[in-house]
Each structure stands twice: as structure tokens, then as C-alpha cells.
Image 1 (cartoon, rainbow, N blue to C red):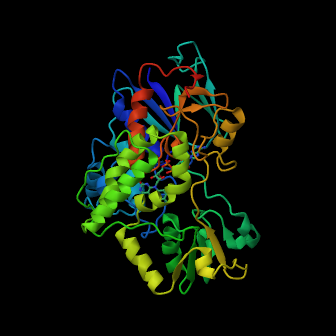
Image 2 (cartoon, rainbow, N blue to C red; image 1 turned 90 degrees about the horizontal axis):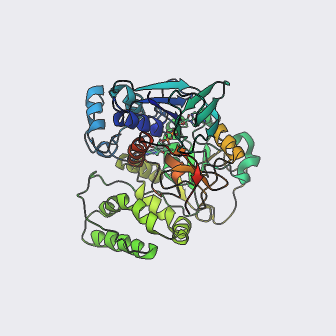
Image 3 (spheres, protein in one colour; image 1 turned 30 degrees about the horizontal axis):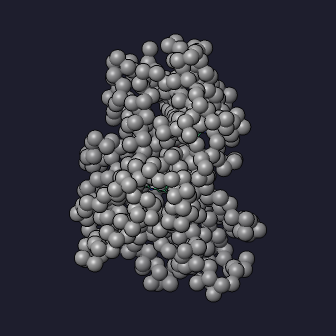
Length: 459
Ligand SMILES: Cc1cc2nc3c(=O)[nH]c(=O)nc-3n(C[C@H](O)[C@H](O)[C@H](O)COP(=O)(O)OP(=O)(O)OC[C@H]3O[C@@H](n4cnc5c(N)ncnc54)[C@H](O)[C@@H]3O)c2cc1C
């Protein structure tokens, strides 16, 4: 009998882990994947359902294959699909979405293995603990396993489940609530265009990549409109160089380093590259794969310090806009269409009066995954006490194997998590290279000999 793995959420993380499960399966260890997502075709998730050609990926084709061991997979798909691309191309997100929707049919299923898309929304999940060894019943019957409830009342039973839920919308900003219909709290809300219609003065709260997407998207829809983007730091993300793949440099974060030591290594090396008129971005790219191992060595206090004091500047250099977006944004700023800064800079310290803008769009950072109300299965898992927030706030408390740790500190090896849920266990956890790494490890683990019964999580 194949092992049944339910994947909750069919965005990038969901289809990538499903593909990895198929690849890790064999005739002797078959898998039956149930991929649950409300979309007609899984794959696009939140970021890749856009059709706006200005919405491009923020990394090049060479870096975004679904498989670590096949870095040219995406490039070959582009050639076959007629999407013009070279290793250094920033694809449109819509094209990458198509790649993801076509990923599963392209992976051969070993004898006895399959992936089935179950169209629906999971509203509850239960971990039915079984015998002492935690082995699931081979017939998928009443033994240990996971039971998912769907919004239409149907249920699914599996040996294990992976939460691949994506991320909540930005936290609503209470100071703009009184602006009523003129305040759009979620920049990805499908009614953004309709609510923006006719706006002449648009305030975007946030100055990260989402803000650039919002401005680039609304600018052609609102001819003559002026945009103001504000944040605490008032700084836009860095841009990729025109030379898209700078020559690699070697930077090593030594195993003994403290947080302060690691930050010094990165800053000093980036300064040295700049001084030598080379590209500082190569330093960030060299450090990036070492971030999670370094994170694992930090103390909890150092992690909290990084999140509080350094994460914004790291994200600004780490998640960069494409060179084309930089050129576009520079043009908008030069033409006076877009103003960027802190509230104090833009308004000389004064608060906005409600008549100053026709539209306010929230584009602030990542809210906690346990935020109430954005996702029914999160609410249900919280109510059951099956999840609890990570101490740093954004992700979930997880074991090193990404198994959920419940409110009583008990780990549930049959319930695993991907993506933003891992923030805290890891720092880098949401972009495609992170997802494919998580997926490969999960696939091996979930198809391994025993899934294990719930047990006390180690500290
Ligand atoms: C605007 C934007 C641009 C980005 N650009 C890049 C980029 O260029 N490169 C990069 O590497 N990363 C990028 N990222 C990071 C991004 O987080 C990942 O690439 C990826 O989309 C994360 O995948 P995910 O599956 O976790 O979330 P999503 O892709 O959002 O998918 C989550 C899916 O789960 C489904 N779902 C949620 N709850 C349930 C439920 N209860 N039941 C059933 N289904 C459910 C949702 O409907 C959705 O389809 C971007 C992120 C954003 C927001």
C-alpha cells in the first residue's frame, strides 16, 4: 500500500513538496499524495497568480528550479514552453506560476504512486495517535494517522500531512481603519483595482518589494496619480546589478561566530568588495546559503536581536528588486510620480490628514502565521492546541524536523510544516530555493520507515 501524504495548500511549497515526494517514491515505497487547494489548478498560490507583466521574480531563472539537483529544470521548461529565457532572466511571475502548474504532470510517478488534487479548503486537522511505534494502519483505516476536514464537510485520511499554507495578509493598521473604503489593508486583494479606480493621491504604507509591485501595477491604471510610499526607515530594497550573475566570491561564516562576529564578517567583506570596485551583492549571495546553519548556532537572545535590530537591513539587501524594476522606479521618482521616505521626511513630521489621499494601501511586513481569522485550519489547530507560535513570533514552534509542537510541548511527527511556518526554526524559509530544500528533506523523512508517535519535543 502506498503511504498517503496530504499536502494542505497547493501554492509553490505544496506543488514542490508533492513533486519531491513523487521523485523520492519508488515501486517499493510508493506514495499517494493528496494535494488540497481551492484553486482549479494548483501551483500559483498568492505570488504567481498575478497577470501583470511588471510583476517579475526577484531572482534569476538559474536560481529558481524546483530541484536542487537539477538547476536547469526551469530553464528547460522555459525553452519547451516558448518562454524566452536565459540563466540571468527575471521571469514574469505569471510565467513562473505556469511552470508550477505544469510541474506535477512533468514528474514521472513510479508504479503505485500518484498525486491527486483535491479541490477544497481544509478547515480542521486532527492527529490520531496510534500504537506505541506510531506506525499508521496499512489499510488507511482506523489506525494512527491524520484526518483533515474540508470546508464542504468532507474528510480525508492520511498517514501524514504537510502544512503549506503560505502567508497571512498584512496586519490591518488601526490608524487607517477610519479611512473606510479608501483603506485597502491587503495589497493582494482581488478588488484592489476596483477600489483604486479614479484615485489621484495614493499612500502606500511600506517600502518593500510589495510596495514596488503595488506602485508598478497601479501607475498605468491611474494616469496622473501621485504615489507616496512611507515606512519607518523609508528605504527601498536594493536592486540587482545589471550584470545579473556576479562572479561568485568565497565568504565563510565560521562555526564559532557570534551574531556580532557574523555581521562584522558580512559588512567588512561587502565594504572590501565595494572598495575594490567589485559587486557587494556577491557577498550576500555567498552568505545566504550559510544563514540557516549560522542561525541554528545562535543563542535565542541573538536571534531575537537579529530579528529586532538587523532583519530589515538584511532583507533589504537579500531580497532585491530586478534591474528593470529599479529603472522603472527611478523614473517614477525622477518624474515626481513617486515619493519615498519616512512620514517625518515626507510630511515634515506632521500626521496625514484623512483628506490627503484618495487611497491607502497597506504593504507592511510579515504578520504571525498564527494571526487569527486569515485561515480556518490555523484557527482550528490553535483551538485544538495542536500548534503554538514560535518564541520569536512569526512562525510556529517546530522540531528540527519541522514537526508541529503542540501547546503542551508535544511534537507531532505526522504533521509537518513548510514555508513561513518555519520562521524561527530557520531564518530563510519562504523563497523557492528554501522551499525545494525543505521539500527534499521532508520527502525523504515522510517516506522513511516510521513516522513516529507524538512525543515530548526536546528543548
Ligand atoms: C508578492 C510576492 C513575490 C514573491 N516573489 C518571489 C520570488 O521572486 N522568488 C522567490 O523565491 N520567492 C518569492 N516570494 C516568496 C514566496 O513566499 C514563495 O516563492 C512561495 O510563493 C511561497 O509558497 P507557499 O506555498 O508557502 O505560499 P503560496 O504560494 O501563497 O501558497 C499557499 C497556498 O495554500 C493555499 N491554502 C492556504 N490555506 C489553505 C487551506 N486551509 N486549505 C487549502 N489550501 C490552503 C492557498 O490557497 C495557496 O494556494 C514571493 C512572495 C510574495 C508574496
